[in-house]
Image (cartoon, rainbow, N blue to C red; front, top):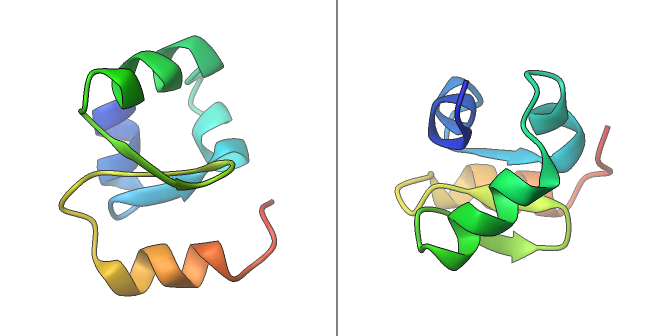
Length: 65
């Protein structure tokens, strides 16, 4: 599974622990951020540019698990 697919399954945004479960590694996340394919609105939080803002805010304000 690639980063884009994993984030789509999570609704467009997810914390690092949730992305690790389907096997997404840190190097893949860094490449996707550098390539402009996804955003990193906060440390340990990743989102697609089309992710609902409400979801990003919700995830930003809750502990990662």
